[in-house]
Image (cartoon, rainbow over all chains, first blue to last red; front, top):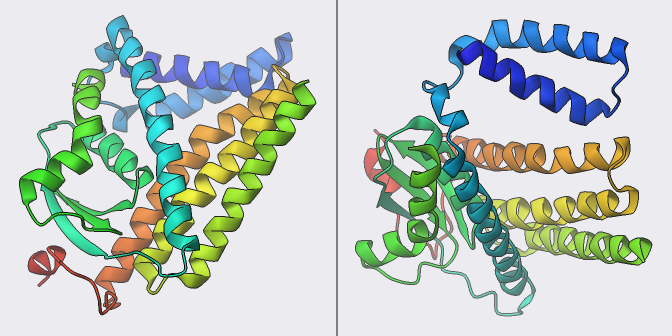
Length: 161
Length: 108
């Protein structure tokens, strides 16, 4: 099952990349996808059933819009800090706890954190994220956990868990 | 019309790339510099690619530009994570005015 899912994904990506539907191209794509899925299928997602649950795709689209908005905000934030003469930064590394369980969920959360205003994931140890923050705006763990994770965690839970 | 819109996206992208580079020079230490290098440069480059997609539409070039956006996004976030963790592990000091460092506790 894993292998078939991976094969479909790689083949679709190949078709999009090459963007032509002639027979030789299809054959080359199928062979490449077959080899790749045989080699890497083992390390692929633990649970490939999730790929065929349609409500997850709906949440991916919702998440995408929120993510793009946050991403644009992040850029204006960084541009402001970089360009203003006094440079309003107050950096620090904080620890936040997540309630996500799966590896892929944590990966996506870490990547989203890296792209949002002023935060970069330094390390993940079990369920604790260590985050470098360019402007530490509060000292209270509960408040900054909510500030950093709150926007994405619930959507990622719906998509990947 | 499409040309104008794509040009706007490309100009926005170049401007954000420029902000990223200014940040790379102005900010005080490697951790803060990575902040500006990842965020501004990723969105800037994605914006340039999206402008290219609008110009060429659903053709071979446009689709390649569109697929490059998620790839670039994953590559740059993972690279930023690897760099920032690597520099901490190899003992580069945080800036003097850093207010809090929880990560120190888990290091041996």
